[in-house]
Image: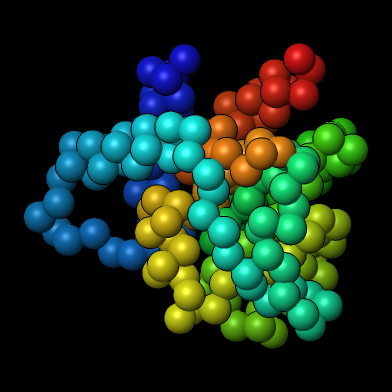
Length: 186
């Protein structure tokens, strides 16, 4: 199972590298694909070692803040995205389908990154995103991205009701939706 998770993560990293507009930070020219893959594999393995998801508190659309820890007791999908990310936008229809399908069993928390507040709000409205949304201001992005091993966008992190990280998927990958089907049809 870990090998298939790493394979999926590896493929997502490669796709993310190709989609340069969705890369979190530019890679040094000297860094090879193999080094990037090694880093992604290590981060995926670390994120899946049953560790508690790092807590954060970020501004929400209602003008207050939302803490991840407030969602304990239910499955949570963190969706790290940005309005500037083509793959993030392309994934919204599937996310809407799966949100409708499993909203009684999980909560999606969209975590907008690298957008202005205006661009974030406009994107949520334009794409009619029905799940909870928070915005990660630039000054907090580096710390949160490091805690979750975010290398590219979108990145989805599945967290169990006890707050443990179950799975991290980088990129818009059909394996993420297969995983949700498997998780909720136990």
